[in-house]
Length: 158
Image (tube, rainbow, N blue to C red; front, side, top):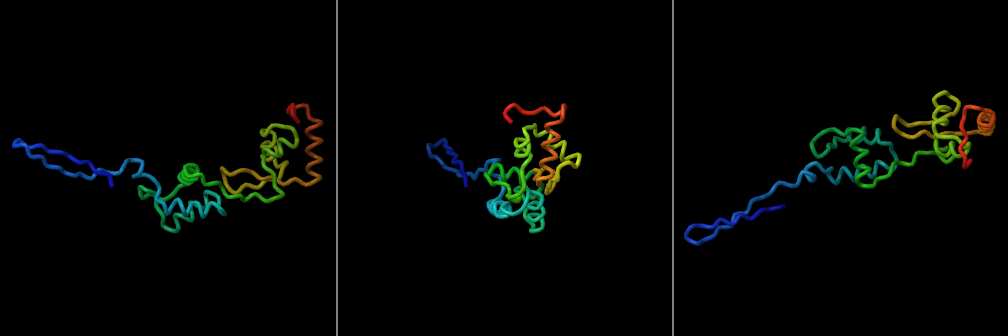
């Protein structure tokens, strides 16, 4: 506990010391409790942020100001304490960046393919990354599309 010591000099020469407790710094007042950080670290091994929020709220955890948890709070805790996201990507799945590099196109093209149903992509929830599964037939179709298209700009290093 932080304290301030006040020295009160009296007219007759005597001095009285008064100790006053200081409130904790504002940062400490709004810092997430250690048990919450520990619980987020445990849950983040297996769950995405949305499910961590649900679990913490079900278990009656509250943040430092007594509020229920929101997704943005969990994202901040993970960022602040270096807690990585759960690795929920299957071994056969590719990221948007990997697909873009594979075909030598921008990631905008890959998102276009996902939005228009050209690629099968899995996404756990809004804000989470897409994971893409390619089979040989789909890969050949996309290679042909990229090669034959006059509208798809090919990247120079591909």
